[in-house]
Length: 254
Image 1 (spheres, rainbow, N blue to C red):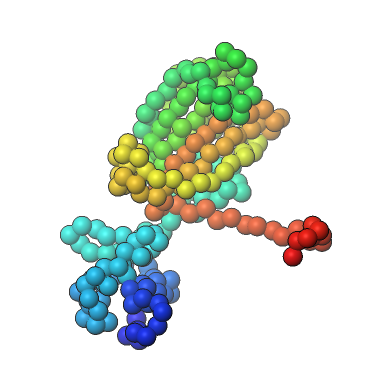
Image 2 (image 1 turned 90 degrees about the vertical axis):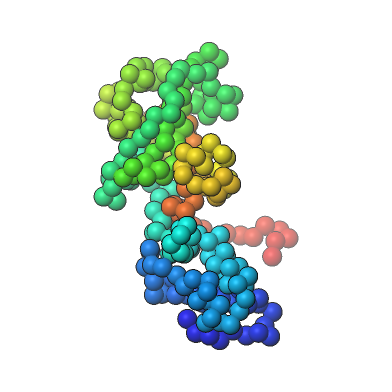
């Protein structure tokens, strides 16, 4: 960092300080490195404690830093990139990263689906689903809450399987010989409720990433409606967009 604050700038001092720290995080520091304390920022930049605290708060809200009570402020651990362009299970992605996946089974039961889920799974009146809720862990650290709804008619006896150690997708493919093809999903921001925060070991109101949608078999039949809540401080979802050539603007468009 360099002490070159422009005290006549429209940009607040705390914002200028956070920009300088952000540059260090992006160019010099590694995940887990300790950041300067508020006292160090006060002395280095010649600012008040409130200004120093606001600068750090910006970095925390942006997910670049985290406070550890009694220890200090650190660069956040590297986020997992969980691509939306390929369909993999949580277990497969966790193993690919050299970690041990596991699950804590929260709920497994026969259920009458809501109208939204019934429509997504193309179910007729009276057809039931398995409602499976799990806390997903990597090396025993909570990462996501996963709610899955699967038609009973496609996978009878699923509730007899041990879903705390493996992937539902593997069970579907190995036991029922169904081939999973693709998924249509949406990504939304979410806020942790008290119950979700307790499970994920975050504060109530913490930002989460919600991915929900339907997975299909290769023949087009819907297999699963899933809702996954990921910790916002541990995941990011890269998205690749391609511009289509030779698009003719609509009349009146500029």
